[in-house]
Amino acid sequence: MKNTYLDVFYQAEPFTIHQMPKKQEPRKAVLALAAAQLPDRDLSEQELNALLKPMYEDFVELRRYLVDYKLLNRSRDGSRYHISK
Image (cartoon, rainbow, N blue to C red; front, side, top):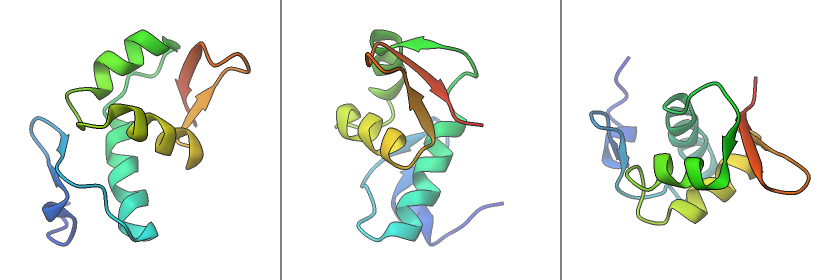
């Protein structure tokens, strides 16, 4: 389902975030869309970065938000990531 309100923040194909929403609810929605693009397997930080770079210019911020919003789990040592279920 297409949400025209969120369309100003991202492009669907290929998934690219143009601007990170400042308000919490649209940010959560955009982050959920970004998380849905990731494979359901363990990823090294390098692998994850390679997937996030084409999605958003500040891929480090995107990675941090995905972890902060509990859409992505990070290992204790920070070396591995996995999509939250």
